[in-house]
Image (tube, rainbow, N blue to C red):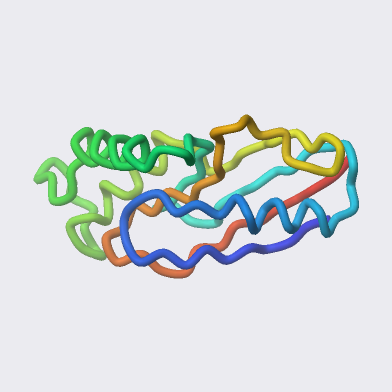
Length: 135
């Protein structure tokens, strides 16, 4: 089963969409297999991260923004603004696809794990994630 999910973001940061992925896995009817996610953008990424304590999310966001700051004069690719090239670098440093085992009809995530789209642009927007569930 292949399906497209839409994650709407309001700006930079981690946006959890675990529930939407879980619902798609349930709807697939697959009991054992693999769920693959792929983000169709060069300025956003995917990550599995802690979803219990919001400070973990904030610390990750602050760390990556310190590592690759918006408006860095080193970058020349700024056609869409000072966050343009930094967003591409952040996406290159993180993941554009994830694979999660499906066991007993459910994602085999750990107790504190959630699935996030990591928006690297200031303005955010409509992000497309392709989901494939297969056995």
